[in-house]
Image 1 (cartoon, rainbow, N blue to C red):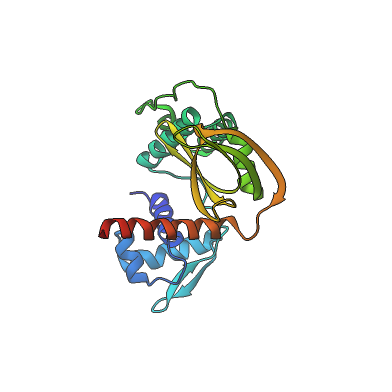
Image 2: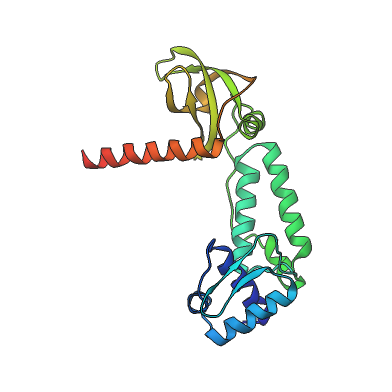
Length: 233
């Protein structure tokens, strides 16, 4: 392993820890000696990385530092390329365009010997079967970002329709289905909605309260509790 790869790996290890981590633990995770860790931390600090700490106390990396040049392992490049291909073929045009831009930026700063790995066609992701979209995913994503409520008309499995106001917090992709998770004002609880059962949808100017990420945590906790109860029964 080259020194640049080793420094990059050490940066990744430090990023995984939000609290100070000992040099011995860093050495164990990075697979190098403690003496090498001390030398590499000094090298990163010389490059401008805000690594605070000292031997015997522990080290923590302050956010905001990027190690030039951008380095990835071959498997990391394949993982990124596969993710981009999936987004381009399974989501909406806006995300597909963003994914293409992202991989182009990454490719532009990769070392020449790794640049060809971005497009080596090692994997294939099938395209979604064409169908009439019931929900504009770009509009939905914007409503999620800006925390705007949505008014929907939703069909149950028997075709009966109900009008609801929901707070969209998450969009899930399950094979051919698209699922919206959110707070339902009609049911006064978290619910999930299949996009193909939404007959009509309209964004509202009114924003829902709190932070979306906190609502996601509440929804996940509730779902985990329900799954645990189901497993016990």
